[in-house]
Structures are given as structure tokens and as C-alpha cells.
Image (cartoon, rainbow, N blue to C red; front, side, top):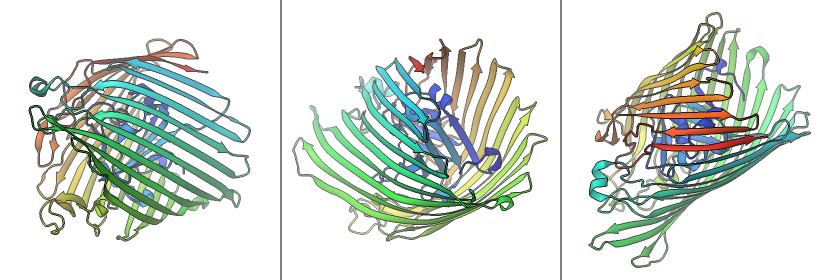
Length: 612
């Protein structure tokens, strides 16, 4: 339910439509990089797999919702969300909740929750068209129409993108270009369409329907072996639909909400691998993965006046996944079944938001999840927010547990699966302060956090049953993370210059070895200026800085620190037309987010947006 940020003790960052429009048109990963406590790494360009980690948790420990529906791939080994799957052009708003959230959202919400919201119709018809092109053979077109008429509202969007890109492996990495270059480009093609229809006659009954379909084709490289630059292709399709009905009863004191949902993810990997030689032999294999998720959730919201709000609900969800593979060359073979599995999750949850006077808001939440043929897990969460309007101060604190059920692949893979895996668990606490100065011309937010993870599922070779000589999954890992998140804004010159910045310190350790976890930078930050020299103009230079870190476990494959300088500029020709330009990596910094995988060089993108 809608809650003002000043009334919640959770650490929340909201990214609005205008901020999304100023970021990359090809990857939502670039949008998430500006959020304190969030770390993103991409295997190559915009079409490469992008992993998102919150407060040092694993990438599979971030729950991602699209219009309230979880969108992780049920067939993926770790069940993680690939941030390259969603195009920014369809997004209206992103909410990032940091810290364990399983008491409200269930499995996967160990590190946090990313809630992606698409546009809803409101008011008179609003049409928009955005066209962009630029470096690396890029072209993008996004169109939408939204509005309302009587009790009905509507919003429809469509997007098409093409990008020649650059090689995922080795691009702009001197030691590899000299010995193994030149490399072939790994491009991207994407088509997305979505629609939402709402019905609100003003009688206390509301209906919201949504559907989305997206297809993506991208190149990828093996990244290992004698010939790591391969001509492999990934084809991915995603579709989802939902229907949500709400009914206000007892003079709006009790609201019933029922949502049904379904989605499907399909991945076809045309894997090409060169070996032997010279000349090398091209081994080609097709891998197909598909995963279905469908279910329903009921939520009842009871408003108790001075005793706050009580939310009670339940959820039932089924996940089904399977994969196959087939050798194509040099010798064709039959299609083989890799794995298949099904699991049902039944959940009960409750949340009590209790105001204590005018300044203090408390919340207490708990949830029980029962996974079929597996162990159940219970989670809890408490928050407190205390406001001092006289001094512009908000104090917040939260504590809670998180959990993640084993994935279908980890349980049912005939080669590596372990049926009796326990859920991964975490315990997290944080304390923060939001402070305004000089009539809020300066705002500062500081949050300290600490998390402990246990029963983490890891892959190992030792101690497996005789039927699994190549390794298996076990609950063997433990980790702990702690750190500080800082963000702030300074309005230096009213209506002309403002400064925003964020910084994250992270200490993430494997408790078995006391070594730093892979791809967790101890220091990262972003500083941006927002300059509006004249009416209609906006110029936003920014610099992103990331410290030294390790690409692989046990502090191996070190990655050097880097600073990347970007500029966004836009000019409103009229109330209808706006020009925009984006300069990325202006200093042509060479850096890696994943060992041996390339990142963008100096690039330029420009276009026009029309709204009428």
C-alpha cells in the first residue's frame, strides 16, 4: 500500500521517469548503478548478462518485481534476475528497497527488492515518441499512448532497438586484443510491447489488467578456452499477464485485493565453441530452457485509525521449468532432456503498521512460506521511523530476516541437483538518518547496515554421492557484509545548479576463508551536477567511481579501479519537442566489470522526444 518515505524505517530509493529517461536507453543496469548499496556487473555490452547485488548479497538474492509480478527465470541455475532483459523505455518508476524483505515479499528478498513499475493512464490522452541513434550502430524507437475516459484508463507502449555493439570478450582490453584480436561484434535486437487497462467507476471497486511481451536476440562469447571469442547467439522471450481487483468495504476501512498472475521465460542458446586445430573444430550445441510461473495472491488491508493499519494475506504460486540440449555440429545428435522440475509455494503473511503519536511509526511483519517437498521457512521484519519536523530530521531503523528457496535446477538437475537442500537465510539490521539543512537546500542520508548469511548454496566437487562424480550443490557457505550508504543533494544556486552524490562502503567476506567476496567493490560512488543555465536547457555531467575488487572467488583475478565520466544534455524546443544527447565514457577509460569482458569506449547517442 502507498506509504510516505518519511513514515517508513526501511532504506528506500525511488528512481523517477525523468531520471530513467536520462540514462542509457539499452540497459536498466545503468539506471541501478546510481543507487547506493547496489552493485551491477555486466558480461560485455548492453546485451550481456547483467547481475545485480544489493548490500553485498548474491545476485540471486535480489527479488525483482514488474508491476507486482516476480520476473526471475525459474529455469536459471541460481534463479537470478538478468537486468539486461528489461528495456528502460517501458519503465515509469523504480523503487529499490535495501535490506532483507522476505517477511513481506517471500523468497529471494534476502538482499533487497527492486520494484519496476510501468505507466498507468490518467487524464487526457498523452502520446509520446522517442527516437535515438548513435555509437556502435545503435537505433532505438519507443512509442506510447496513455490516458483515461470515464471510468476506464489505458496505457500502451512499444519499443524496438538494434545495436551492433562490440565483442563481449576482450574488447578494449589491450593484453587480449594483442594476442587474440580482432574480435567480432556481439549485437543486440529487442522488441517489447505492453499494455495496461484500468477500471475505476468510483464505487470502491477497481480493476487493473496488464500484459507484456518481449523478445531479445544477442551475441555472447564463451570467454574461455583457446578461442574464447565465439559466434554464440542467445534468443530470449518473456511474457507476463496479470489481473488485480480491489474492493473497499465498511466505509473504506477494509480493502480486499486479489491478484492473479502468470509469466513465461524462454531461452534458446545457440552455443558455438572452437577447439583443437589448426584448423579448429566448431562444436555447436543448442540449449533450450523454459520456465513458467503462475499463481494468485490475496491481501486484506484493515484501517484501524489510531491503531494503524493491519495487512493480512496469502499467496499460492507454482513454478515449472525444464531444459534440453542437442548437438548440431560437427556431428548431429538427438535432443536430450537436461532437467525438469515443479514446485509449489504456499505463503501466509501479515504486517502491522502502528503510529505512536505524530512522530513515530512502527511496523511488525511476519511470513511463513511452505515449499512443496521441501522445508518451510518463517521470516520476520521490524522497522521504526521517527520524525523531527522542527529540525528536518528523520531517524530510521530496521531488522529482519530473509530467505531464498533452492531453485528448481539446484534440486532437480540429474547431474548436480540435491533434493533436500535447505533454504538460504540471512539476518540484517540497519540504522539511518535523513537530515535537511538550510530549509532543505541541502539534504543528506546516511545508513549503516550489517548482514549475516548462512546455509548458502554452493557448488562443490568433494563429498558428493557416487552418482554425481562431477559435483553437486550443498548448503555449505556462510558470509557477512557490512557497510555505509551515503547520498545527498545540494541546491547550490536556485533554479540553476544542484549537486547530487552517492557513496557506498562495503565489507563483504566469505566466513569460511575470511576473504573478500567476488565482484564486491569496497568503495563506489557517483557525483553529478544538474545545470539549467537557461529555460529549456539541462546539462548533467556525472562521474562514476569504483575501487579495486576481485572478479573471482578467493580474491583471484583482480580488477583495477576506474572512474567513468558521462554527460547528458537536453533542450526543449517547445512544449512538444525535446532534443537530447548523451556522451558516455568521455575520457575513454579502460576498465572491466568482469574479468576479460569489455566495456564501452567513448560513445555518443542523440535523439528527439515528442509528447502531445
